[in-house]
Length: 299
Image (tube, rainbow, N blue to C red; front, side, top):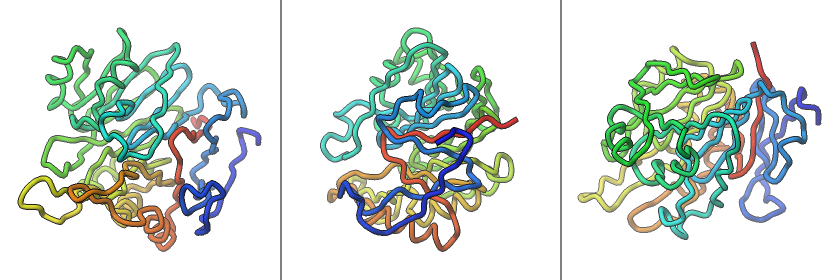
């Protein structure tokens, strides 16, 4: 279809033809202004305005953003040893050619700060952007680092990025990222849990064209005594966050690990997300790893 048009798909609770999961394509909102491109589709078809903001869902919590010739990755993951066979997402290749390269990392845990992936993306000239709490660690690992204090916008060529508060299940420092470009704005939240800053972020930066939010509601058992509390946003909390943030589209990330005794995801996570989103009239796109969303440039 023409890149200026928008396809609206309806949330349908019946099996996909692939049988891999229980749902068809989720909705891309008319108001969100996004065009969905499946994996394997040539980047030249359909044609895309060079000023358009493009987002590719990657494995686990990873997202790739393209704007013109520049590429920005958020929490890229390619190291198969991080999750092993427990993670069912395919690890998307980090092919980058030309333009400036940037990586934004939410926190230091290996499933978000994958050093192999960061080195592959940045090469010798790219920049790693992280919170000041992480900057020393990242610089000691040999990366070219740019610290990002909370609420201080940084210009990365045509991208503008701002670190905003997040809360980690271990109590380790963590941030979420607001990224603007091409007249569009998204927020990426690594594996944050519910916290009190959602309203402030929404008032200061919203509305968002899309919110990439974790949904697996993980419970940890390896820290004793076990709390039995969710240490990551649950599907219901992710929908609530999208409402508070003023997100036109919710794209779920950070789910799909096989539960074990010490790491348990919410059962039926996609079904619960879609049911909750319907009730609160939040549009959801279940983007699979490798799939792209495109927002045409807006002045």
